[in-house]
Length: 51
Image (cartoon, rainbow, N blue to C red; front, side, top):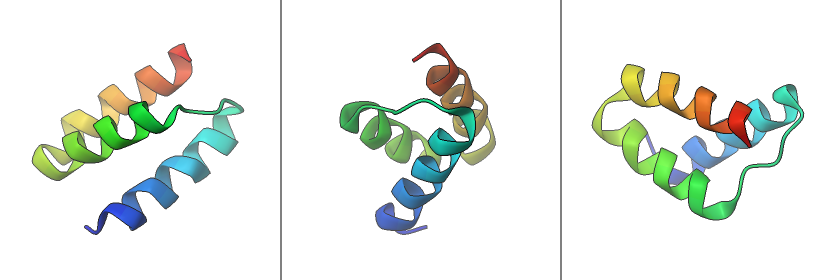
């Protein structure tokens, strides 16, 4: 999945949750998503909720 698509998905998720993710967090999560999609997505949701 291209990084731009991952970032776009994260921005949409961030909007739904009502929190803004930092650029560093988004890039880190994009890297994790490329390596281990399901585990990274679960971790990413927790990170975004934590703010």
